[in-house]
Image (cartoon, rainbow, N blue to C red):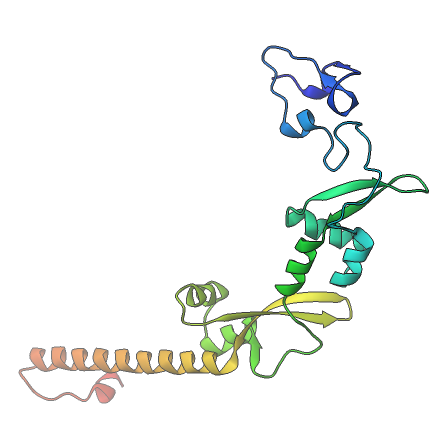
Amino acid sequence: MLSPRCLPRTLRGVGGARLIDMPGVTYPESVLTGRKGIDQRSGKPHARPPEWGISTREAAEMLGISTRATRALLNRLNSEYRLVACPSGGACMYWDRRVVERELDNRIPLVRKQPEKLCSASEACYILLVARSSLSRYVQRGLLKEHRIRLATPTGVRVLSCFLRSEVRNLAARKEAARAREEEVRRERLKRNWNGRIGGCEVDLDSANS
């Protein structure tokens, strides 16, 4: 299939250019509608900011991150935006204020220090004596609840997966009790098998193993 970049265009139509209709060529939606955020009639940035819009710098100040991270975040959230011509030249991006406010409402709280009642995923694995994959299965099965926090570090902000220390210890105690019951059942089964083999005499498994 031919690439639209290799095809000639006229200088009339929506956005200042109209693609030539050619058999066997399918244009992406982004090519058909022109550059996202511009005025589709003129093919240039808008003259005035929208009423629902907020500039990238203002959104970055509200979110507490850089302008580059703000653009990346709002793009991931599929936020609508418009390009507005600046008096000094160029264009500024104005984003949907509602998306920024919704992100602030749903945002994980920022902490300077990990709370004592929470333990990290590595600590939970150490207490439970399991791998990280087993820890994820415990979360999926509802045995543990994952709590995410944003931890401020000297190098930046990290998002950590944490667990209530009390829940981890209770789960470890239940696992230990289950292992003890399984061991007791195994010893009873082994004892019955030994008694059947030697004619019903009682056997001390500890002395037999030694």
